[in-house]
Length: 124
Image 1 (tube, rainbow, N blue to C red):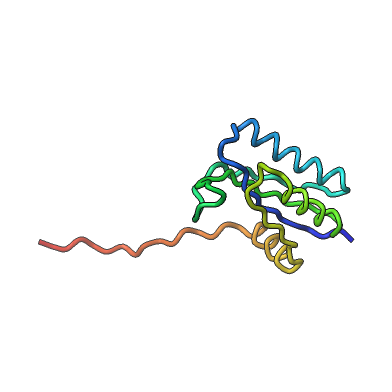
Image 2: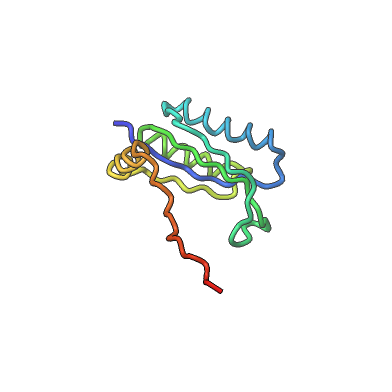
């Protein structure tokens, strides 16, 4: 049975935008070749890291949601660990209840912004 996963990974900051896109596409393609289905890929761009990692202070963040069997997700995690352009990766299996809550929240109309009470200016 296919589960839904999310992987967040950091690419080296010295990659050009086109190179970073190629790496993200290659990672998605390798998942597809193992039987996974990519739901969406969100490229968050270059951001400063909370702490230095491998003498690097910035990284290009990419978040990918996908559906696959556990073996394909494990293989993706292994490949990310071997990829020299990937500084760090975090793979999580998404909880079914959290996915349902996310769908309900997306379907609900947006909440109206809070209205500040009117305070009349002081009388002089």
